[in-house]
Image (tube, rainbow, N blue to C red; front, side):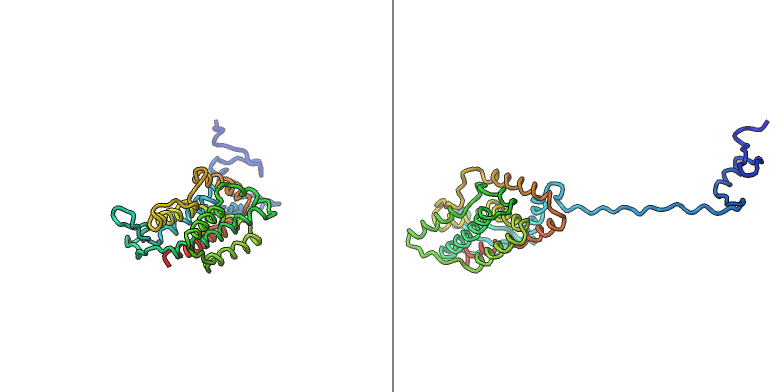
Length: 277
C-alpha cells in the first residue's frame, strides 16, 4: 500500500508522482498547452529610509537650540578681571585646549555702552511682541522677563551721578535692525532670537555683568538683574510656549532656527565686548 504522504495526484495529466517530484514541479507554472515557464523572481521591496533625528528633537525646538548653544559654549569667551575675588581671579570660560583668553579690565564707559545697547535690543523685541498683529507673538507678552524699563532705571541712576549716557553703538543698532526685519519676514526665526536673548542674559550675560558691577560699583545691585520671580521659572514658561508653537513648524523652518542660534550669540557677544572696549 502506498503512503499518502509519498504519492500525490497530478492535476495536469491524472497520473501519479512522488512527493519529491511534486515539490520540484511547483517551481514552474503551466502555460496554455502544457508549456512550462519559469516562475518570475520575487519582487524586492525598496528599503524604507528614515530621517536621522536632530539632537534634542524629541523634546522640542528649544532643546534642539540648546545643543547648538552648547557647541558655541566651548569656544573661547571674554575673561573679565574680578578685583573683588579673594584670589584676584577672573570670570569667563576657557578654550578647549585649556588655555584661557586674555584677561581684560572693564571700564565705566564700556559698561554704559553695554547698558545702552542692551536696552535697545530689549526694547526692540518687547515692542515688536506687544505691537505685532501676528497671533504667535501674543503668547510671549507679559512674560516677566522684560528688561527694557529696568535698564532705563539703571541709566537714569548713572546720569544722576554725573555720567554722560552715550548713544547706541553699532553692535546694538545693527542687531535691533536685524530683529525688526526678521520679525516681519519670519516669525519663527524671530521668536528663536527672542528666547535666546533672555536665555543668554539669564544663564551667561548677567553673570559677567554682575561681576563687572561688583568690580566697578562696589556691589551695587543693578535693576537689570532684579526679578520679581525666579528667572529660571519664567524662562521655563516661555520655553513651553515656544515648544508648543514649534510642533507646527516644518523641519525646514526648524533647521533655519538652529542656524539663527549662532547669529544670536554672535550679536550678543559683540554687545558684551563693549564692556572692555
